[in-house]
Length: 296
Image (cartoon, rainbow, N blue to C red; front, top):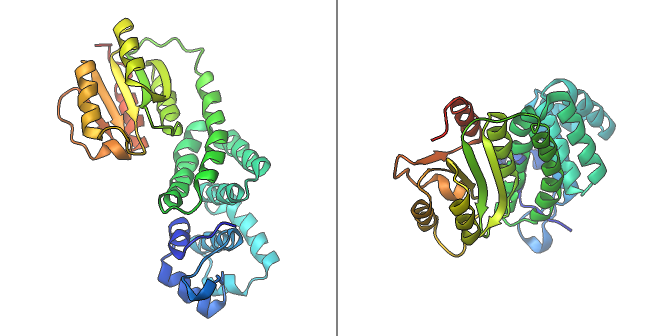
């Protein structure tokens, strides 16, 4: 059984740990276990209950009112809130619940509904990325979330691929860009997202995917010139430092290098040919800015 700390609940629900403890004591909400007198631990069901409570609270419902509700009344209020108060946040909460239970049918149903309602670009920016960010927060605290992350990423990946395929009817005439993640990096959602936005902006994209060896990159570049390289790294590289990797990349490639992701963001731009993107919003603005620029 999965167990979560109160800090995990804090990160996912957006409510401070000391406030959660006070609500537990005053209103008997979300009571957790304390095995052997140790720190509080929360189950999947506890986490789902706190997600529902926090959603109602963040959308204007007083905690005393929430505490007084029966389970049926709370569920009815949630259904109304999901539809009217803050739909994007409601979808994120529902996705977290579905992934905690590995409920593939429910997860896919929610994904299909939000894409149909809002379009892929809205969903990527306002639903998919915030959802994956929250799951990632728990993953970074080593609390059994990688399984949910992989489960969810696979389904979201399929939706982004469909959107990319939908752009194939376009005839791009912009700069040529190769997108890849280095050897040891397997997170694909950010790379696929960049692929979509570069392609939508008219770039001629070459998609290498994740875990790309230096040899494969060098071989391709020796045969096919490109104007830009784009790479995204979430986890830190095992065989080299981020600084050393970028230095080696610059020695092999004389065009512009675009980098993003936690492992690369803190590195300074040391030349005119280096571009650092710190967020999805920066990526979108960058693709729009360069849309009409000719290839180098």
